[in-house]
Figure 1 (cartoon, rainbow, N blue to C red):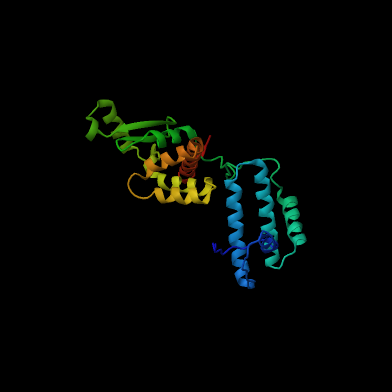
Figure 2: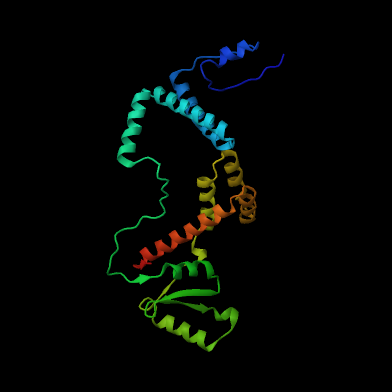
Length: 257
């Protein structure tokens, strides 16, 4: 006799359906505490199944399953379905629903007109172009970026040496160091992308496990390519760079355009 063992919260009629098929099943009635724990697990399970289903008709069924578990979770905590719906309607009335497909991309404080203005592209270029030997600075007088090359690695050049002396003489009064990609935690951006953008729990866990140790960035690029999310990654990374550039502007007293 073949026996399969489960620890699974099921719908009320499942034991009846199993026995009607000629099989025998064993069940137990959960305590309130056990039920609350398993209903939360069931929410995670149904949400994962929704993400993993690509057939449009079956996806609708997964949504229906998810709603049933949401109703059960509400009732398990002493709320009626009517109360749940009342709260949903109230929040939709106060804050709106999701019908307009709005993606929030940025929130900023009111502009302080007394602050100098810098083009955000200048800051972003520094983030993307700088390396250990090429250092970018913002010239507040000329309102442009300048690049000073480390002479230890590239030798002395009259124009470059003169720029280095000018930066040293007018540090902070005229020149300010622009951020570099080395000041941005690329690993955290990569980790946040996996946690926020990979819907499948098993794929997400797999990718998180793969970004530890040497070769993490190479393995990550392999994984986003396999999942078909390369463009999503580049868009996410570019937005993270933009956010870092905006943070730099705020920290150094600039408005940006």
